[in-house]
Image (cartoon, rainbow, N blue to C red; front, side, top):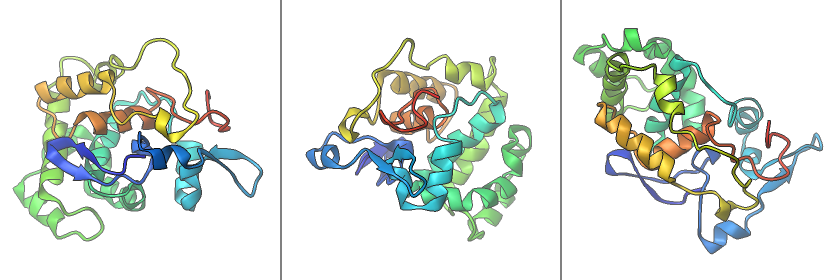
Length: 220
């Protein structure tokens, strides 16, 4: 996991989830990569801290995702995470989905300043003007693409086999592919899509598989 990283829009983050799991510090490499649950199953150790993390790890994180709406949602939620823990986002995800129309880009793109003001008063979500406005502008950028969002994003997935991480220090915070994806999305008008945020997205959506060696999800 990253302890401090420089995520999109120059927003410093303290990432405490495996969505941004990367560290090259000596202390990080000493941390256990795996934990065996009460069900006898070995999992990535970050999933042990919370039941919702465990469900997310087992059912979602690292599963290849090609649905355009789901990818747009993940892009926006990874942006909202900057400076926060991922569990904060997971617990608020139902409310995010409600206020952003199920992350339907066509509907979100029509949202106005009145909607922004309303959401700034909604305690169920993260009340950050820049991130709320970015969600709306990213919907408009999605609709303006000349290729489907899923085709664009997956075009930056690493090619060929990768060595599976065995310890925390093996997982990068940023890669050439996430940097290139960030650059291309920025060029196309997307916001809160920095290289670290995009690597977190790649992990979460299965563009890379960063389940640790020995995790029951590894390679699935």
